[in-house]
Length: 184
Image (tube, rainbow, N blue to C red; front, side, top):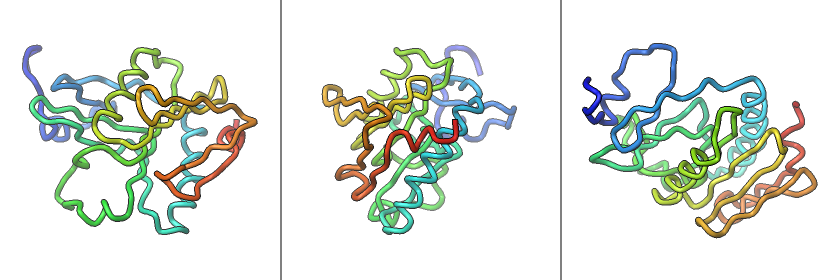
């Protein structure tokens, strides 16, 4: 592919595995930095807490291991959150032949890595919300905080003393922010 060639979601997913992970932003391939141990510990712990609640209450599904979401077409944008939640009623409408979920999850969770820049994080949050995510959580292992985005202006940051609430997106889910960082 030449430098000026835009890539489709299908082409991205058909690329040979070279050991790296990629996202597609308006047709342009972006190589993702490898996640570190802290990132994995925090994402794993939050997935256990959230996933257990979702499973026990039959709310839908949590997805990990960098699930692909096609957020726009022509040019294509494919993003991969650290954790995603999709409501049960939306899961039934999925075409099992689709490699990427069409559209945004109900909840997208991004766990910050040391290489993430504020502008990259802001861009990801905006893309998730613009594509229809009802809520985005940005988990910061360094600050041990979670920032909740409902809209570009409805933003709340929680610290370890606070409780994270799934609100109307993941009904009934609650955990202390400190629980997310318990394995650190």
